[in-house]
Image (cartoon, rainbow, N blue to C red; front, side, top):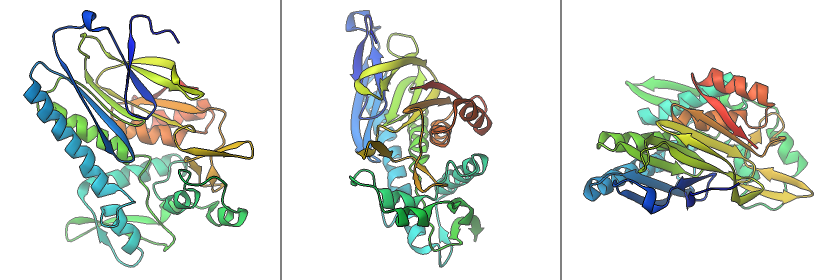
Length: 323
């Protein structure tokens, strides 16, 4: 697509790019930007403020929130809340932070709403497929073993001595919050920026983004969505202010084999990556956690069903682009 006067400012390795005006057309507010590796992607934080010290302190605070969620909710870390639950919760209740309990409860709500299309307990299946490392599918027997279940129904949230705990009703259960925790992390980062008085900012972590206020030209942030067929091009651009957007697609983590693309968004009913006519689905919502979960749940469904699911899942949420 033609960008007119705008140019690209690449935002990490995910679905979005920031479209910016030439320096001669911007206002006097300075823009400060930092990129850090976190949660398996590159997170970008852009802050608009005339005070460099204030802007840098706010970016530091936002990064701390992103890294706290990574330490606390990653299933790759043995001593995180999720790592401990996956090791121990089939035998005994495992205490988790209130934030982890909140994200798990929201994941279970989306699982119920989508009849398992979104499932925060697909850890065994994601480990089996491991699309970042594999080049061929698992065997038919391995796939059948994981097909047709509803793992989320075996996850129990409760309280013990006033603190949240997790208990598994099956020793086959494993939590993976890859479809929701990153959105929660972006929300926390945005909240930290607002708390420190930042009125214009953008937080992006892969395919999850939150825009605060206005950009340095006094207008909504203009966010471009990469073309799934060619990430060097854009398929659409969206004005965003005080709102989150998240994209799910089959072109982030995948391998091709036998003429089919095998990606990371799994269908619990088949035990395989979801089949979809679309390659990309973008959801806008008031929170990035809702946009993240909504895009994950809706990907692979027919668009009318996907729209109804997203609207039921979060008031005001909507599908704003598909490709």
